[in-house]
Image 1 (cartoon, rainbow, N blue to C red):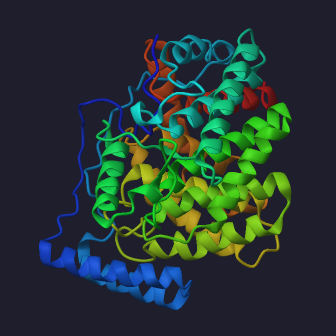
Image 2: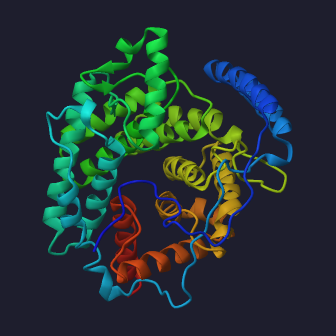
Length: 431
């Protein structure tokens, strides 16, 4: 039995049954969009909501009928009609394969050379999340799963200490394989050209992104994982490391890539939940209201999607829903900003959940986001009742369960552990 690598897998498998249109932006239009992006960046730096909205509208006008089209086609994997959800009898052993899978593929070790590591902290975050969730099943592997989670969490703390700034950093490996390392390599080259590479790297870790925003990805996911590890262990050093990563996120300005901002929204909301400190809630709200919501289409054939081709892709769509759902979960019921956050989530769910009728076009980030949505307080869930979340979740569950029975689970450790733990809790409530 095998699990897929610890990544946001999106469409799992090479063949697609359906493909949708993609954005095809000519060079002249792209140049104009880049100019607007520069203006948008400055407005975000100044936290000027009016200007942010104006620049976004200018970009939408330029995109025209391509607004909301992704840069790569949506691809769908069919779900067999015979595929059925998990049986209660399957849940107890559904996470047994996690232990040998993780142990065979463990790459992290305190003291390793991060410049030779073609792996990132987001992978470890998935391990922690999966183990923390799965150990709640209280079966024969629970103790081992918690031990793995703590070992992974200790590595995250060591990496943070090496960075010396509070950020949970990215390995400074040059010419690594995979999209995250390709993006990092491009950033390193620009830093070399600008003579600033020495400010970017410390102890083999990338510690500065010069407001590119890329470090928010791993810092957000790893910081949230530490929050959840603290909650099950009550060990203070995990909480303090999570707070340090939240303080780093709080200090960063918003960037024009909406999904980067959402990782910090996610972390800051979780930091508020375990500390009760208002500064984390206020920062999470600000980053959501100025750094995530403004990029969403409010009208047109793709209403509810984010307009730019990159963030129109399904993985990022659900990543942003996840961050906003985490925020909505901790906002006071009488918070004047809660209706705006809830409406954004509602439109986003309506824009994409219905696509699961065609098959699976995104997996890990959709599972994680939809599970958070299904766990929201009643006063928020009531506003999202018509969003086809249950139907989308059922399609994902049927697909995941069917593939699990075939000996090839299709979710990373984090999404898998969270899914089966949720199903176990659901079975307990409704035996």
